[in-house]
Image (cartoon, protein in one colour):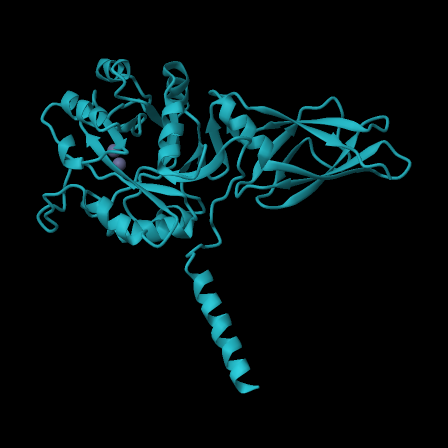
Length: 372
Ligand SMILES: [Zn+2]
Ligand SMILES: [Zn+2]
């Protein structure tokens, strides 16, 4: 018997170790795939000691693993290097290389990036999918953007509403940036940066057809800055054909993203609507005996609490017309359909989601009623 028990203990402990290697915490971020695309969680704006951040790049990877992200980027300021005397690094690719090595045994994808850092009217922009950060260092900002384009980079405007550069907190697209967009050198815009959702940035994204981004821009620790303050880290959901770097790049250039911060979701209707539709699953639908009160059980497949308002001609029994579908939980609506139906269109407005400034998406689901 003894060797058998020993073997069993050995086997189960090694299984435990392999599970532990996922590093996931309870706050892992998760969203369902949508038809045709994988929904990948990403944070493409982060700092380490290789610019003005406070941590070594390996910590950024450990944080991302705890949040179960699919892809990240270290985006050090090329032109702002407050730690350079303590940490000299003539090769500006070091943060990326260290992060890449840390992520080696994990599925987390690390994308090379840098933050091109200038005063207004140029502002700050992240170039990701670069091949060499050193070649992005130029006196003239025009040359930095041209070099990023030469490397095939995806470039987005960071914190466009940042008041040190826009004192009224409203982003203003400069002539320099208009020129970059025209040249195919600026492709996206942060609509969510850190805790700030800027409606004006969303308006600009739609007007200029820029890809909508949401990023943490973390300098300290994700846990201290967001989680201990009761927040989730801001992320960009990328709707990618496959789970690969090439697919993420293709999706970013094609604009298939949704920015998320806590329970707020911001995206173009063609991306956000299918995501919300996939986020809610109809688990069952049956009438209460001899009544026309339909009980519909809904499941929220995301790590966000979803706030909905009833948009149907029918009212609810025992539910307020505005209700929360808690993250990863089920809730049952009682809908007064006035007569028993075989099929019902459930129609809800997502009150914490935006497809344009002040515009909430309205989502429909077909509910097939199970006869009693
Ligand atoms: Zn910046
Ligand atoms: Zn930054």
